[in-house]
Length: 167
Image (cartoon, rainbow, N blue to C red):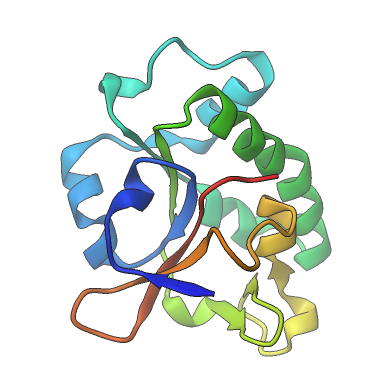
């Protein structure tokens, strides 16, 4: 998986970001759109323009949904039903607008398995008890070219993940 320090992830593709440093400009510059509103766009049709005409739509609430799900299997099913179709339609409807899911973190809840480039999320220490975000949200598109670890400036810490186009 490639590293990215540029800010182009804010203007295209789909990202999961938990780093306060990476989210700072977005949080202070635009208002977050609730998850239920964005999921409804996927079902009923996207508006003509983004909220406030911004190049980024910051979405709040995804981590809350994942935290209240009974287990990784339920989270995976919900993401495949609601978020994967959203990400697919997004890049076709607004190819020059970034979809950013602002997460609360902490970063240790996100695990990148370097062997297969899969990203997992959860509180449990065992991977089989975590949800595989890569397959649930990005349908496996998040492996190889077009996938990035969003690096926090001035450190080697990962602050998020970005996929250019969801297949």
